[in-house]
Length: 454
Image (cartoon, rainbow, N blue to C red):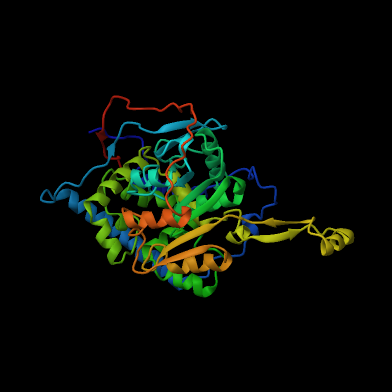
C-alpha cells in the first residue's frame, strides 16, 4: 500500500485560517466584450435570519466533530470490518494540449468522429470525473442514434492539469478547444448534470455559436442567486440538510475551512456513501439505487478518478464557483431582440426597419429533466429557471429523484435521446480520416491502493 505524503494535516488546515480565506480569480473573460459588474456591485445575497445561520453553523460543526470522534473510535475497534480503500489506477485518458500550456484529459464513447450524427460534450459534476458522462448509457444506444459522447476532466480533477485562475468563462473555452481538437467541426450539444450544469450554462453564454442545444438534468444554479424570489429561495433551502447549508456558507465566506471536511471524507483514502459525503437527503428511488452494487462500483471508480491528484484546491475552487458571481445571469440566455438606439436617428430608423435590431441570448433548444422527488436539486430551482428562461422545455418526472432517472436507466436514456434527436437513424455513412490524439496509457505500475495521510 502506497501512502501519499505531503498533504496538510487537518490541524494545519485549521491553523491556516488566520490567513486570507478567499479564492481569487484573476483576469477578465476572453470572449465576452460586455463590461462585467464586480462582486462589490452585487446586492447582499444573504437573506437568512442570523439566528438560523448561527444555529446551522453550530449544529453542522458539531456533526463534523462527532464524526471525527466516531472515526477515531472506529479505528481503535478491531471488530469493525475494514473499510474499502481508495485505489490509484494507471493513467488511461487521452489528453490534448491547450493554448495556455495545460493538458486536458478526455474520454470518448459511441460512434467515431467522422460518422457522428450528433456530438455531445459533458462536463462533470462535483466529486466526479470524465468517467461519469451519462452513467450506464449503452454503446448500442449511442450507435443507434449516431451519437458521439465526449467527456473531460475539469482542471485539477482526474488527469487534467490545474488552472491557476479558472472561472466559468475558462470552462467554456476549454470545451471549445476540446471540440476543435477532437474534430467536432459542427455544433455540439452540451450535457449538464447537477452542479456540472454551471459549466454547461457557461457554454451557452460564452460560445453559443458552437452549441446546438442543451440537455440539462437536475441543473444547479447559484443558491444565493439574488433574482430568486423569497418563496423560491425558501422552497430550495428548506430541502437541504443543515450540514449542506453550512457547506454553502463556508464556500461563500470561509472556503479554506472546506479542506477540513474534504480531508475527513473523500480525501481520507477510504470510500464512503455518496449521501454522507455530499450531505444529501434522498428519497426512496435514490436510496434504492445507491444501494445497488452496480452503482456502488461506478461511484467508487468515479471518485477514485476524481481525487487521483490528492489535492483539495480544485474541489474548493468548484465549491466557490458554485456560490460566486458567475459573470452572467441565466436571464442573459433568454432570447430577446436588442436594438441599437444611440441617438435620435438610429432610434427613428429602428421604428421603421429591423436592420438595427438583432436577436440576443441562446437561440437553440434547452431541455431540462427534473425529478419531482429530488431533494439534492429541488424542483423549486427548475421552477426558477423556467421563470427566467420560459423558452426552455421542462420535463417533470414524478417520483424520480436526483440519480434515479439519469443513472443506469436504459428506458430513460432512450427517452432522452428520442426527445433530443427524434427517431434513431444510426451513424452517418461517410467516413472521415481523423488523426488520433496521443493517449497516455498504462504506466506499468498497476493499480495501487493508498490512504491519504491526515
